Amino acid sequence: MKLLLIPIILISFSLSAQDYSGHIIKLKNKGELFFNSFSQIGSFRKLRIRNHHFYKLTDNNLTKQDVERLASHPDVEYIEPDYYYDFVKPVEISWGREITEKNGFKKQWNLYNRGKKQRGRGLSYTEGKDISALKAWETTQGNNEVIIAVIDTGVDYDHPDLKENVWINEAEKNGEIGVDDDLNGYIDDVYGWDFAKNISDPIDNEWGHGTHVAGIIAASHNERGIKGVMNNAKIMALKIFNKKAEGEDRSPTSGIIESFYYAIENDVKVINASWGGGAYSKALEMALKDLAKNNIIFVTTAGNHKRNNDETPYYPGGYDSDNIVVVGAYDGDGAKSWYSGYGKEMVDVWAPGNDILSLYKRNPVGEFKYTEMSGTSMAAPHVAAILGLGHSIRPSLDYRAAIQVLMNTSKPEPKLNGLSRYGRADASSFLEGLGEL
Ligand SMILES: [Ca+2]
Ligand SMILES: [Ca+2]
Ligand SMILES: [Ca+2]
Image: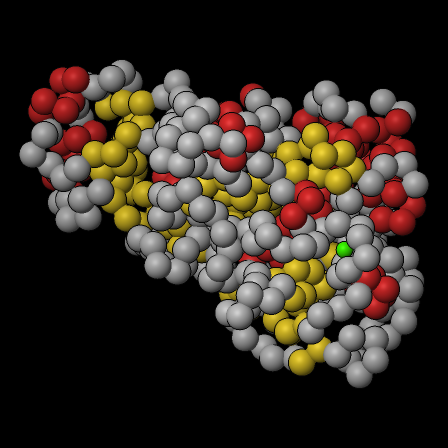
C-alpha cells in the first residue's frame, strides 16, 4: 500500500475553563412554580433524560445575579454551566489509497506486531507488543448482539468495511419517515442520532474521527481493507461533534448526557468516548453513574496532552464512577506514545495508538478509503472492543467483573512502569481470564 503522508489535523484536547454554552438546570420536580417564576428568562429545553428533570437554559447572557436567583429557587437542585468538550487535535493523519485485506492486515501492528520496521517510515516495532488479537480470535471474533456506542463525530455507516456491523433501529428503518415509529422521542433514528445538530442522521461527513474509531472496533474480516478487533458487533453512531452546529467542533455537556441515556435505552454494553477536556459537571458525573447502574462500561482516553492526569484532573476519565476505563497510548515498541497523558492513579491500561490503520469517511466524490491516525483516541477503541469480545462469550457479564479481569490480565510493561495502574490490555489473556470466572 502506498501512503501519502500528509499531516493534516491535530486532534487536541485542551480545556478552556470559561468555555460553555448556556446552563444545565436540574429540578427536583416538574418545576411548575419554577417556570412561572422565570418565564421571562431565556428559553428552556427539556433534556431527553428519563426519570430526571433536566433543562438546558440557552440564554448566554445571564448575569451572576440571574444565576444566583435561579439557583435559590426551591424547585432547583442545582444549576451549572453547560461546558464544552473537545475532540480535535494532533493526530497525524495519512491518506491511504484503496487497499486489499492482505496488505491492510500487514500494516495492523496493533493487532499483530511482527517486530518489523515498516518500509520507508523509520518507525520501530518490537514483536509481540500488540493486543494479541490473533490468539483471541481463536476463542471469539465477536457477536453481533453486542452493541458498542461510538460517541464521537458520527460514523460513516455505509463504509463497505463496516456496514455489516452497524447498529440499526429496525422499527425506524421499516417505519415511516417523519414519524417516531418506536416512540423513543427521536424521529427517524435509524443509525443513532446527531446530538450536535439534533437531527436524525449521525453520518461522519466532516471529520472522519468517529469512523476511524468504529473501524478499529469492528471493521469486517472480509476481503477488503482491514480487520477490526471484533469481526461481529453492532456499532451505534451517537454524534456529538459537528462542524456546523452550536459549538462547531465542540460538544456541550448537555448533548453528551442525552447520548448516554440514548445508549441506556438501547442495550448498549460498552461506550467508546475518544474525547475530553470539559470542566467538572455534576450532571455528567450523575449520568456516568447511571451508565454503571445499567451495566454499561465507559471507555475513554488519557488525552493527547502529555500531562500527568493525577496532577490535573482530565475529564471524563477523571470522574468518580467505577465503570470508567481510562486508556493511554503506546507505540510499536510498547513505550508510552510521546503525546499520551499518563497517571499512576488516573490511567488504567494501555493500547496501541501510533500509526493505526483504520477506515476513513468517504471522500467528496463518494469513495471509501482508509487512513492512519495517531492518538489516544485510537487507543481507547481497542479496549472497548476487547471488552466487547468478552460480552460476546459472556452476554450477562457484570461490568465490575469485566473491568477487574481486564486490569488483572493486562501485560506488565517495564517501559510503562509508574505511569498507570496496570499494563497493556491483552485480548487473549482477558478472554482466558473470563473463562476462569
Ligand atoms: Ca424513534
Ligand atoms: Ca420514522
Ligand atoms: Ca475488512
